[in-house]
Length: 71
Image (cartoon, rainbow, N blue to C red; front, side, top):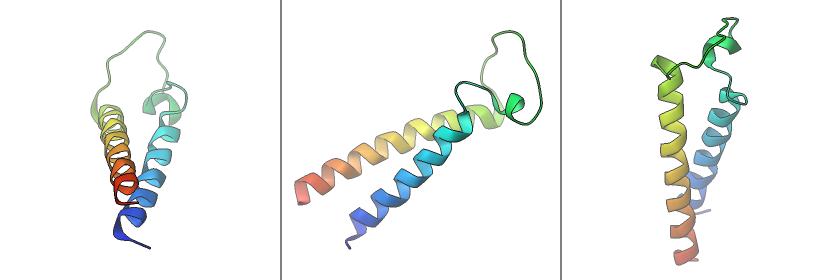
């Protein structure tokens, strides 16, 4: 296995976990027992997970393209 393939597998697992943590738009507060009846902005850990999901998605696409080119 090449380094790119191993990195792509690792990033995909991290990406899956970060997407599952977000749980259909429910905030982390709701996941751990909090409640909110109105729209709120993402703050703290929720924002960090949201941004890291986007970054991991971009990295995954980049690794996929590199694997395709190297192919």
